[in-house]
Length: 340
Image 1 (cartoon, one colour):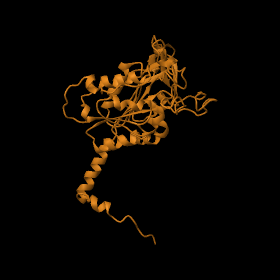
Image 2 (image 1 turned 60 degrees about the vertical axis):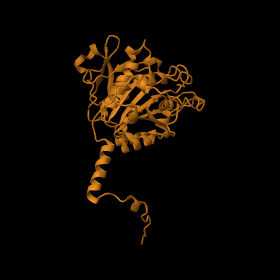
Image 3 (image 1 turned 135 degrees about the horizontal axis):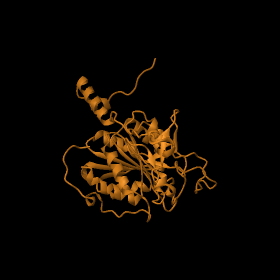
Image 4 (image 1 turned 45 degrees about the horizontal axis):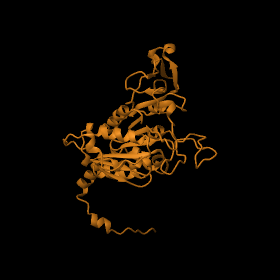
């Protein structure tokens, strides 16, 4: 991210002249509005910002941002964005992907971008379905999901996107949803401010092929009892009267309890900066089904070496030791050898 002062912008400066073309009522509209609205608050310039997407409904995103961008190929957005962020560390690089694009054909590219800690802000739209190709099951579809490609119900256990990210040692992991613009904006700001790979899962409704998938969690009428708001340094409590809480057993297992039964001192205090991803991983697995309270917010935010900085340091060291590299000689060198 560039440290150069930029001219103040408005949402209009970040909105392109392209007609937004998603199905009426799609959750993508809310995410787009949140991103366009938060960009002026980040202190960056459109000409220094790049949005890279893969293939899917969410991947139309770069068309609607008045920035540089690339609608790339299926699953390869993290790889292309890695090249951009490494070659031009002065730019703000965002990756827009979906549960199919990012966790199926693009799963390998995603985990390695996270493992390397490339300075990317990755937004994964999770609607648990393939929307662009008309409703096949995706890597996050639940067992038993009946779709055009699983007429008798899916038998595949679904991926938990946050578990995947944490397993890849992502240094910033968060979850938000498309019905709360303010929460999305706060989450995106925190993700952008983080130096390294930031991974944000967004629960997003596909009202055509998977309508109401998250209704039991995100609808306003049930949010108090079904959504756990993670706040760093505070006990993990929830409920309309804050009567419920989360405790951790001696074996690391998390359990939902009544606060009055155990006392507030026994309630787990959230620590997003914990060096080990184990706590964040346990929280990511707290909701085993859509009838369980689900955590939202920042699960993990830790500092570790950022990829482009490490590459630049290595190149500088190599140049210092051997002088400027002769690229012509390298390209024309004999690429064969003899094995006795």
